[in-house]
Length: 396
Image 1 (tube, rainbow, N blue to C red):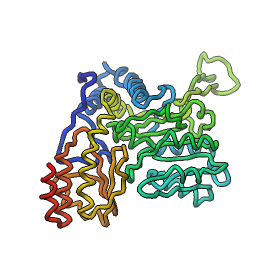
Image 2: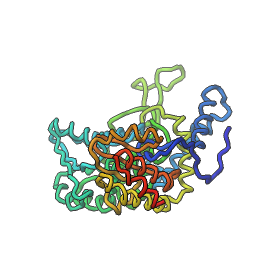
Image 3: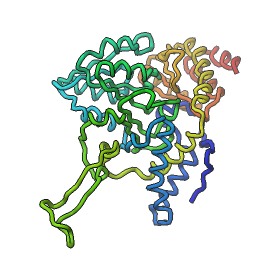
Image 4: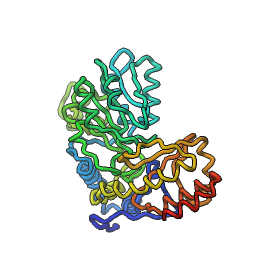
């Protein structure tokens, strides 16, 4: 079995300039080794079975809880962030004529799709619009009217990088009797987060972005005081607290074929069936390394990179979509037909997020100011701005 150094920093294979961690963060070499260890077990090496399944799960849950400043008992496994948000919406019974949702235009597009489908079916849904690169708390104040059941946001917007003041939003919503759900996928592992202090009721996060895991595995968080309001909408064997058959040889007699009891934990509310054990093996490794990382220092290290982009990109025709003081890991710029840069960036093996009319840049551990300058050079050249290359080098 591969040996991993406790507290060691993650290492990554580099092929070109990768500035798109917000899309899919590279898996570290160490986490890849852990997943390969699990696959060797699945190929027939049974010696490490307990370590590579049960222990990996408990290690990952404990590490995520410490990273996010919450009780491990407040967590359960889910396959994706959107599954978690659906569990909240359905568990609270929000439907046409029942309950009200307030969200904002910077929430995840899959979530906005869900809420728009609910709106079209007759549900009461209010979407707060941005003003000046921000979602203003005052606009939520106006939108959270009596009868609001749920306020749903992305803590860090995947669209623009905007970061909510989660505690202030929770205080406001709770004062009106509403619960708060936060999508954590662009925050967890990228910046310091204290779920307990925020007072947030429910959260979900997949692990293939800043947590440096893989697809098919995520965490669901529920505040203990809020869990009682969340009805179970799915049932499966991972929720069992007790199970007894009454039809097999030597069984005790019973009135029904089986008798069973459900658990009361967060996991027993949201977990259903088989987990992605290979992904969890890699995740346990990546979370252990993230714990040894000063995420506040990582924020500080990104700041000059974002400042350099803010200095140079507007002159090349890119309009800022992210407020300058945003503490998150993402910045975005508007430009018409951003796809026109795809070939030029590919020729220089530079990867950023390219969308219809915007670009998104999200550096991580492995990026340096040289990467930012390379991006500016490439965009300047592709924009036909001959001065872009020279001016960028002058900053190096």
